[in-house]
Length: 147
Image 1 (cartoon, rainbow, N blue to C red):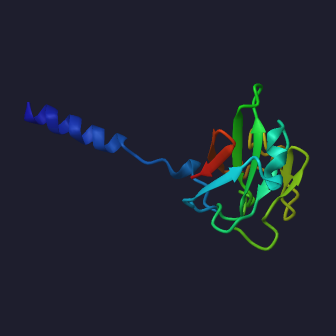
Image 2: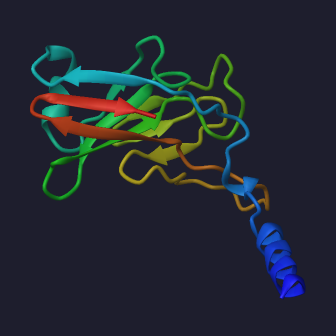
């Protein structure tokens, strides 16, 4: 019985492996919480589906965040890191809004603000990352983004 229990415990410990392959090595996990008041003119675009807003306040993500109302009902919000996920933050890594996409000026990579996916992923065999997702919730006229 001891042999069986020790074998089972050994197999269990070996199978518990953290998978670092999904972790983006270029972006830190930054903890923050920020509230956006939809009554303020600065965030007025968030009252309509598909109008993204760049939130560049200090302490919001690494380089800020892009927030957008999405979903068929318009009751869902998405928030994404504003720093390009495919290289370390530098002077050109803060992306810019281009309609409902964002573009990194370093390599001209384009990402969808609806899905976070890179739209022009090169077929060169290298690993490329999609946008870093932040949680977003709405309570009345306040949208809270956080990580």
